Length: 437
Image (cartoon, rainbow, N blue to C red; front, side, top):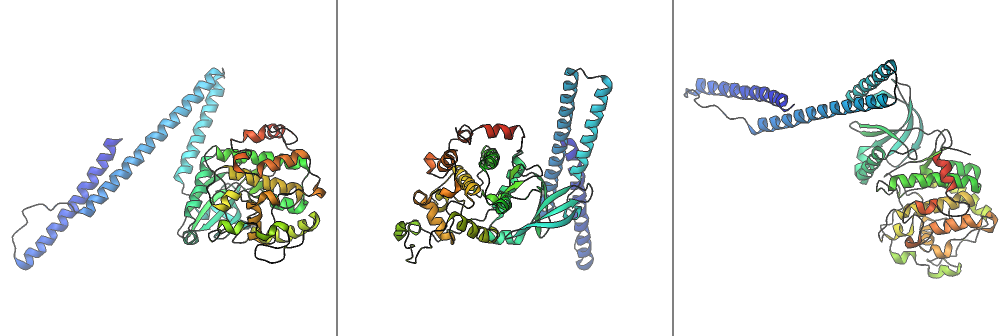
């Protein structure tokens, strides 16, 4: 491999050297013709630009052949593994030949796909299904195969302006690294001069936000199923040392069979708390419920049905606002005192509360008031009697919406899986077996 690369380098170097020599001779001949100076007696050395080009070409060719040899070795290993498995399974010679030919066909297709450079022209854009601060998501169809995907199209100049480049890289890296049935799959990514494209799995079932808006509340059995699948999704990314930080119903998508998958990694829309201080979250005069911290009269307490109607009127608007909703953010994130993976389990507790009650546990008319309620969760976490939650459901929610050192999931997802009561590990067994209600 190295000798081939050096041979190419040698030829190219000599060619550049000859070109430099020819140019030098031509220049000297011109000078001699004009000034009558003597002929060149020494050979001019290659310029620094030429040396840099040669070094870059050498590195490129060596990397290319190194990758080629690595791919060849991997193909040989895959064939050897298949041959060994077929021999152990006592498969007939004819079936062995058919399976080996099938493997060769797949390998050929894979190499052809590697050589093909994907671009936006390979896809036919269809319906828009989402729009964010600096991008959009569309259903698209690959022209060659007819397969349907969800394409996220992000404007690069806007990403740079908002400082979101690292967030986008985190999303791409996580989707490429984590292989789980509980998160949305990334098929490929590419870019042009203006946009970055992420081609992902299309889930036609909508999201949990839409489901909750349609049904108001879920039964405890339905909530148990979706909470269980969310536990598996969160666990799958935590195992790879990622924190989602933006788990909310909008990011829980449903496939055609009703299974739920986690999406939107890295492109979160947190509330801008840069100008907040710990004193801003103090209860102040609001302990009595008569006044807010700024002295204004507090809004009268609503019944569960009134609160549900008010939440539904504002929910869609909050989902697409530039600020977003802080209803699912953990208190340690708002206070900026340092946080870890346990903040995702707080979000799970808030979502479970909304599934059973109809609105988030700390919802209010203004985002700042919601933040104050979250930080002072001991005073504001209440379960409406009209919701008629079981003691087991209240217990699980209370163990998720609590201090970090007491929160379920802090020592791993198994803490939630083995929890006794209605929300126990039976659901997780159903999920692992792929059984839906």
